[in-house]
Image (cartoon, rainbow, N blue to C red; front, side, top):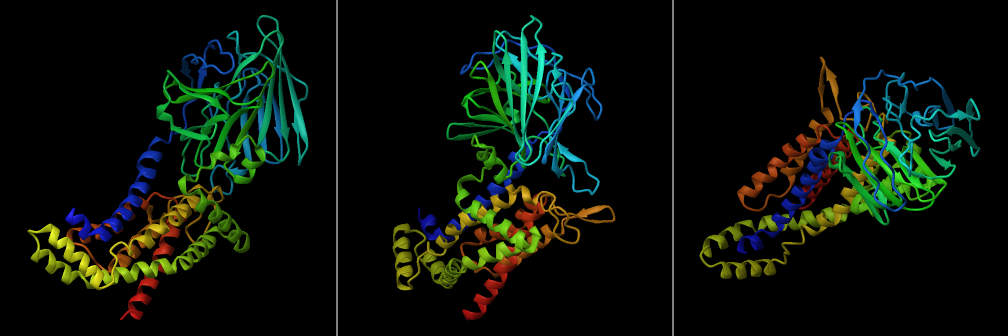
Length: 526
């Protein structure tokens, strides 16, 4: 108890630093650990019976891995291509499923010749197969389309109708409705003398410059936004009852299904070693779904409705992250460079927090001046903790120093810091956004190639500035605490090596501004 009160300020400072370290470490060691590489294509041999609405969906059948080339062809080669302003969808006549869905505004890499990002992986397990209540699936049905191709622009809405016949002779109709300027589209299924039970969505790996595939299974259940690492999906299933929508998400992209009739049950299943499938139940005879397949862009998600925008998760400090993200976009519109926007936004935040930083610094200086007297009191009353505590409090009172006042301003900055961190790490605008010189993608780790070796220049500079900042900070606490704090720059440098260069740029600029402020305060306080 005595030690805790004696060093309250430095313990809080240390807790703040370590909490940030643990938070960043969680992002690197836990979240990214479960990112899944592109899965090998597989095929589902048979379909198990579906379920009635609002009940748990049955597990899917076993899947068998099947080799495939770079381009998957439908069994009979027949496809219908739907071109919109933002996507190019290829739909197979066999099964009426998505063979491909390219996002025209998002290349796979930042190379000039990079093809558009395709949200559908090659293979026979293709999205949007329909399961019926009697156990049949339309995956093997040969449909006939009412048009050979379709094109929609602006607010135009175009409908593709597929007609087919089930093995028992019943008719099935599958309708796709696209709008020219939207990433979402509608799928409606009608069956003569029956109804659809579920629409399936396999895990598809849209690759970005880092080669990362889908990292989480996501769903919205009432007010709760649920997300799980793919490692949690087992053959027994991961149930999401009463889901408004469900699907898979990467850092920057979302593929999800929302029943138009309202929330229904969804379930995720592992059907092979590397392949998971999500199945969203239908809730009416005419099963209708909205499919969102596109970027986790705020405007696009809001336009899609059905609360898809909840996929943009900025954490507990969303109230700081959202306005900071809007400010970042505004600065980019003015200056045309997200790197410059990050520098200016960081500077603006630093200016706004100057009073808090100055208050914290002054109190730390005051506490530093008391260190000799505190050391004497510890020695004098080392065998009488109660007396030492009383004398310490009297020392604080006599010099008008509050041991907690130095930490409080820093604690107040935590929402701003984490909010800015989340806005930068989650902004799809930074994907493939160039800055200057060797930094051509602010969403990728910083590497300057020298003789075939990638050197993290920004990260090393960031570590050096943290060391300078630590050296300029008034030292307090016992020698052990001081040594721990001196290790922080090294630890943070290691943690930031593989973080996006946009985040490293923010931290570097913030450190440089803090050093300038500390130097000025040291000069003026003498």
